[in-house]
Image (tube, rainbow, N blue to C red; front, side, top):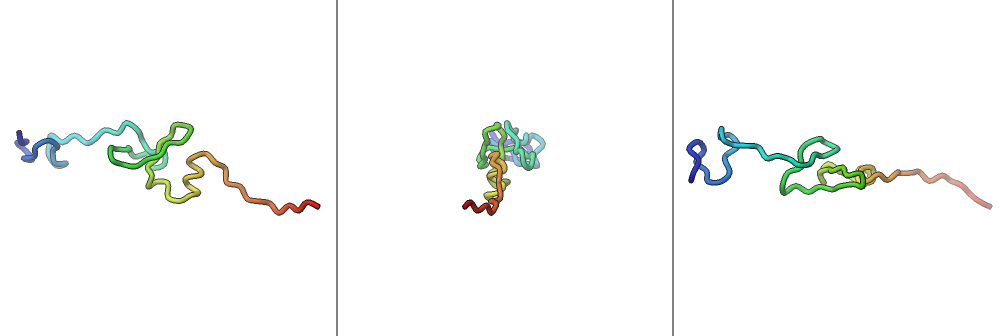
Amino acid sequence: MACIYCGRDGEHHYRCPLYEPPKASHYCSICNEGIYGGEEYIVNDDGEYAHWECVDYGRDLAKFLGYEIKTMENSYEI
């Protein structure tokens, strides 16, 4: 049966007074926004979630996963 306000069957239009925004069960630890159905995400060993698009570069991914990025020192052994 179609909604009397927006005329849609099933999901209501987002401007309909009966519309209910989707609920997020997990939130991104980078942007603090909800992670909703159909969105790609990753989880680290600490149980933190992040949107895949919030992890822009390899450096961000390594940091999120808890890896330490080091700089090699010039050490010559004789």
